[in-house]
Length: 67
Image (cartoon, rainbow, N blue to C red; front, side, top):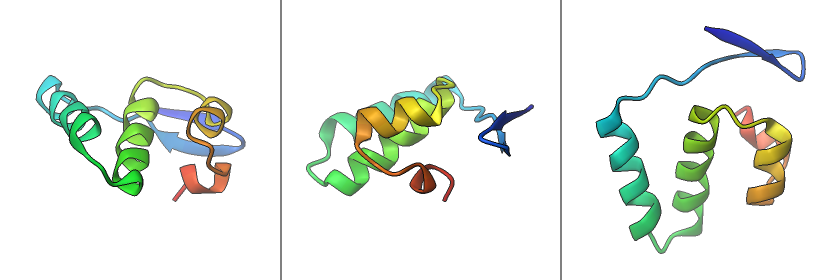
């Protein structure tokens, strides 16, 4: 399924419960900010959060979300 976000189509992430659980484990156990931000970004996209919400929560630029 594709959705339109800021005029760019993005594929909705489909993650299994095992994958989500593993990502949440990485998120909780990392001391590396870059890893934390990337994992949280993936989880937020999986939860269908908007780019604006992701920008606000993680303090990153919207262009980062699209990379």
